[in-house]
Image 1 (cartoon, rainbow, N blue to C red):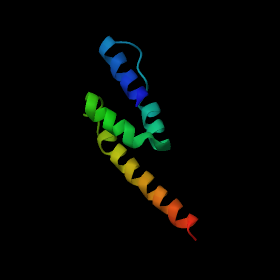
Image 2 (image 1 turned 90 degrees about the vertical axis):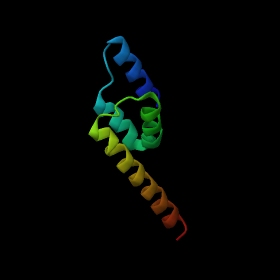
Image 3 (image 1 turned 135 degrees about the vertical axis):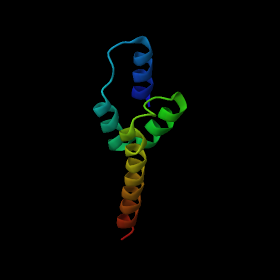
Amino acid sequence: MILTIADKHKAVKGKYRISEDMLLTIALIGGAAAEYITMKCIRHKTQHKKFMIGLPLMILLQIALIILVLYISKL
């Protein structure tokens, strides 16, 4: 979330940007929902297919992993 806002700010100022790979990596390790919400709120990266498709897929994957962990822990 903070990185997405920082990247948007840097984009507006024309400064060195945070790489898309870094933003996607942070999303993959657990920040996909926050990044997706932030992205939509500040209208950043909304034209990039890898964000518009990739982040929702990551969210679904993270939900599935949470459900799996909860299921396994009840065994």
